[in-house]
Amino acid sequence: MNSMAKPPPNPIRGRGARDNIDHRFSRCRVELAAAECERLSDEPAHPATRVTPVRARSVITRNQSPDVGFNRSLNPYQGCEHGCVYCFARPSHAYHDLSPGLDFETRILAKTNVVERFRAELSKPSYRCAPIAIGVNTDAYQPAERRLELTRGVLETCLDFRQPLVLITKSALVLRDLDLLSALAEQNLVRISISVTTLDDELKRRLEPRTAGPAPRLKLIRRLAGAGVPVCAMVAPVIPRINDHELEDILAAVAEAGARSASYVFLRLPHEVAPLFRDWLAAHYPQRAGAVMNAVRASRGGLDYRARYHERMKGSGLLAEMIRKRFEVARRRYGLAQVREDLDTTAFRVPGAGQQDLFE
Image (cartoon, rainbow, N blue to C red; front, side, top):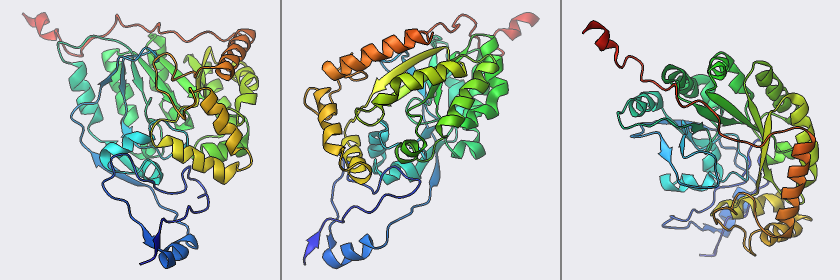
């Protein structure tokens, strides 16, 4: 039989990836007959999102990375409907035998017992309080949260235990929980990081298809800051020849909106993210694709990605150093602080613990 690999479809409106791709744990690869490939190429898929409930055995993940400002995190969801093509978390879907491509955007796993497990882990006698990053892997305020309210339950738990947290999102849905966030902020228990990748609506639509646009994201920063919630603006990722020219304009805009601090991350392309991003470039910026990848490799030791500590978040080489200097100059110019962990860890308590002593 004359067989061939399925040709890539056209970009799918509202999705970052064009197709599913094999992941690094794949045991087999499907090839289709030429006639079937021709038929499928005329019928681009528009997969709907499926949310599957799962039961987690534990929910607090610990790390020892010197590149991030926390050593523990929690993610109510696996996979993310926002569809950001560059998302470094895409390869994690391979552990569930799902593709980091369209599956990552359309096959969402919701940890329906996240609040139960979180409370149990915080209540352990061995637990020692430190800030927890929520939504660092996949957005805790993606569309499924509107119905499931798992993240709201996590915030309620943090308030009960006086557990400090860093919340990372690019969704306006976070404003639904402004009552909890304001209460946490009054006790110095929360900081929110809002990712602002671009001020260009068209680029946002291609790069982060199911997220809030640039103007709503700046309005989000303004609303949070106005409610007394400290906001850090993240320019993430900085992509050479795609959005790097916007760096100073983004910092000016977030400072005007009320952000207190700022950070940035250079584009990361681990595992399957690299071929997905190259395919995205071919679909949306074919004339620029070669120059973009050459610039990325020049900042990654000649590779698509190099995961060295102290390098993976910022890159290396002349271009990476130039971006770092530009960021620092603009950060100081607009009065934005460096990100630091100064949340209160001394007020932590297990609700109800010790109350029996009052009656003895």
